Amino acid sequence: MAAANTGDEIASRSKGISVILLELGVASFGQDDGLIASKKFDKPIQSYRLVKSGAMSEDIRPFVERLRPLGIVKVNDASLAAVLRNSGITISLMSEEQQKSIQDTKPSQIVKAGFAKNEQEAMLALRDFAIELSSSRVKEASERLDLHITKSINALDELDKIINTVGTRMREWYGLHFPELDNLVQSLVAYAEIVSRSGMRQNITKETLEAAGMQDKKSDVILDAARRSKGGDITPENLAIIQRLADQVIAQSDLRRILSDHIETTMESVAPNVKELLTAAVGARLIAKAGSLTRLAVLPASTIQVLGAEKALFRALKTGSRPPKHGLLFQHPLIHSAPKWQRGKIARAVASKVAIAARIDYYRHNGTDASISEKLNSRLAEIREKYKEPVPEKERDRKYREHAQRQGSFGRPGQDRGSENRFRRDKKKGRKRFGKRRH
Image (tube, rainbow, N blue to C red):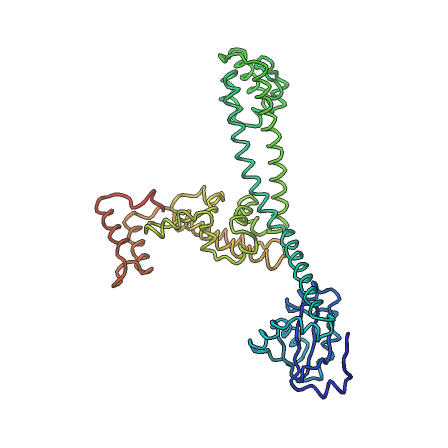
């Protein structure tokens, strides 16, 4: 610590003491701007970020202890004020004009604090600090596992497209030689295994089919179809290219399996409660759509419910049609397997629990909370019991108009009545208002 004065001198200057947080350390000045004490950070980046987060850095603890007998001190930073207040020191925050003045004269403040010999050296130190701070934040952001989940699920979806595109081309091409195989083998990977291992249809054997996962009965059917096939002959050059396509399908499928396992493991460690509610794939897609787990944790349930349905949502806002009931959440088995008139209510219930689960995963980091799933299951049972049958169309229209009136789009003097007029016109002509009717 660069102590500029003795204890008696400090006591004599206790009136009008100001404490300034700088990038390189902390310093206290008297009423006459004379330096009372200062402490340069041993590790500027770590210590500065620690203080800015409201926590005490160990290297400034002796400096804080020396401030105790000084009475009320003025502080230029709210985070440093919190640190000093938690240490039992009475503080008052400087006015915005004083803070701006310190900010504008920061190089000279650094020199006065003894952290640099002159302003040029102070400017260089501030420049190095800014570069190092930015680098540390970029590195920290890149290491977040939820961003890796986002990349993994995007890679998985793109791999699915590649596998389907290449696989479809392989099936169509090999179908010129052995068209009957297309109807007998539905699995793309199994089809690719047969093509890659056998080549010509007359080379298909029972061992090859067993290696591809075919059962005995199915193997006999395929072998019989190969003997009686109406497909044409194929040249070795064309067959070699088809086999390379088949190898690509097999390789990409293996990579997809590895990616899927990786997402499952990462979701278990990063967002176990979201995974428990949505499955790993749907939870990862929701995190990717939100941008990060941090962003998902602050989104309201109503936004989570329609994440992925932005196009339908803005169309509803523009045309007055009914808004979407669900977005990515439709991929959840509970929703897409439910009756149409229950899907919106189930999506709302799931979204509300996902909002809570994301906050627990982000802020608590305490494993799986079973109470969320229990409450969701209880609400789902209530929905299934209460809404066994769909609501009649007249009743549904009446509720929709009442909802629209509550939203202020109908019946208010001076408001746009276009939505109401469109609704009445379409109702009179007996046609739907927009697209498919949603329950």
